[in-house]
Length: 322
Image (tube, rainbow, N blue to C red; front, top):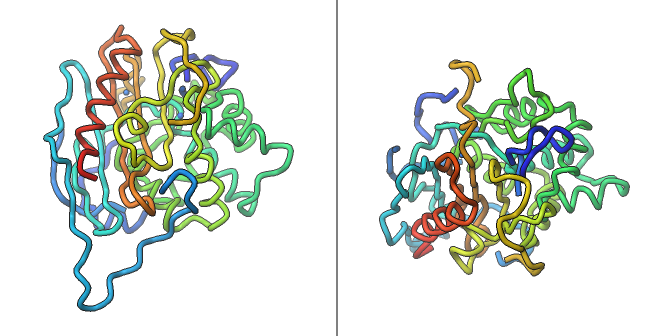
């Protein structure tokens, strides 16, 4: 997405200390609007498969499912600032992580918050008058639809409500001077991983099935004409539900996207303004076993094509072997 004021802000489509993630996670958008540590720590599908529920524990004496980790050591391209989380819901362990609390502007990834908040305020049901826009917002990252629901929910109040409900530590609403720029919401890889865990394990069944159902049917092209099949959809055939985000690449797609099935103040959070962002988030494997969040901030002036190639290569290395 490439935000402009009429569509959620200008078209540019506080980090907590690293506490034990077992505690943090137990508490626990085309669009929208960009060095770390690696370890193994707890964090808290087919496209047409039913929404997943938390995996059942193994029976006594049954070997636990084997842990898996990326087969290739992830490499970040020069000039790119990347942060990611790969979390295994079956073993309850993070198999790869980097700069998990470092913030960046959300672009269209914030549409996850917008959708969850809307459903939780309406008993898990989408009003008939909103159904078409809700579907377009999640499947094709439609900016006009996002702006409609952003205004309907009270703009930044949406982010505050979801942060409190999920237990997010790094997420923050857009700057006070730019309340309509929903793509300027600050997010971190850790908080988006927590959001997927909440959606899959704690949200109401109706909210879960509605949102995950749309994300499993993400279209190849966003409504703004940008190809949103980068990252997870291209990196692995086992991608399940996907929500993408892009911002800062201009208003005109650099190449045609053919239709097809999917595929500020120093104290404020860093949004990476002035540099293009490209994010890929979602799930991989049967029963949405792995949650994968990859957020990237690209060099100023970077092309959409080169940025897509970089994030897809990085995502492929993170998901190889899953």
